[in-house]
Image (tube, rainbow, N blue to C red):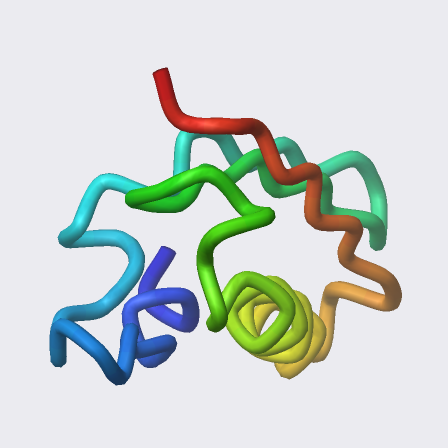
Length: 76
């Protein structure tokens, strides 16, 4: 979670963890599965791809994580 705190939503200036966008992190061996949401539906959010890519990169920057998969769920 500490690495994911480095991913800042540029529109808001707050990291994705403190914004409550990270819903679940599951680690099995050297793989991580991160479930996250956005503040608006992904088809509206201009930063959806940017945030998903940067969450993936942040998780994979840990030496023990070989691959991170980000599952994007729509906000309620």
